[in-house]
Length: 168
Image 1 (tube, rainbow, N blue to C red):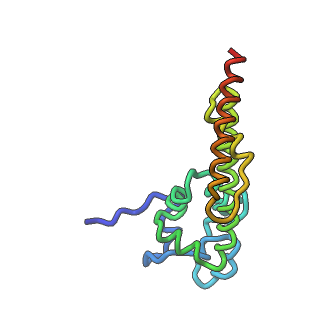
Image 2 (cartoon, rainbow, N blue to C red; image 1 turned 90 degrees about the vertical axis):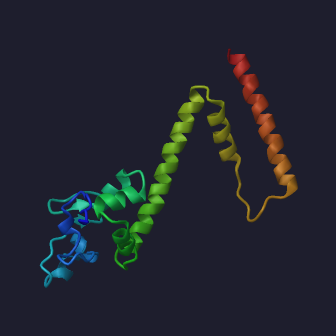
Image 3 (cartoon, rainbow, N blue to C red; image 1 turned 90 degrees about the horizontal axis):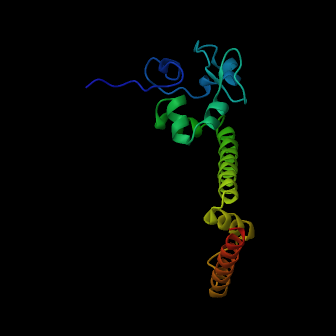
C-alpha cells in the first residue's frame, strides 16, 4: 500500500526533510540564521502577517475553526504539530495563540447569542443574562447556592415570558 502524502498549504517537501523527518525550527523565517548548513528554506513566520518570503503561521492558525484543522493545513500530520508545539522556540507562541483563539471564539459566540436575543430567542437572552451574573467559586456549590440559582433562573424565565407577552 502506497503512503499518501498529506495535503498542506505549502509543498509537503518543505515541511519535512528528504528522509521524512519533521522540520521544526527550520520552518520559520525567524530561525533562518540557524539553518545555514542545512540549506533549508523557511516557509512560515510567527508574525501576524505574511511577508515576501514566508506565510504567517499565526494568521493561518487563527483563520481555522480548530487547532487540528490548522495543524493539518500547515504541516499535514498531527504528530508533526505536537512535536512542533513541544519545541522551546514555538511553545510560547502557541500558548499565546491558543489564549487569543479562546477569546476570539468566545467573542463570536457572544455576538451570536446577542443577535439571537435581539431576534427574540429566549434561550439566548437567558444564557447572556446568566453568564453575566456568574461568579465562579472554588469547589462544588452548596445546596443554598444551587437553590438560589434555580430560584433566579425561574424568576428570570417569568420576567422574560412576561416581557414577551407585553411586546406582542
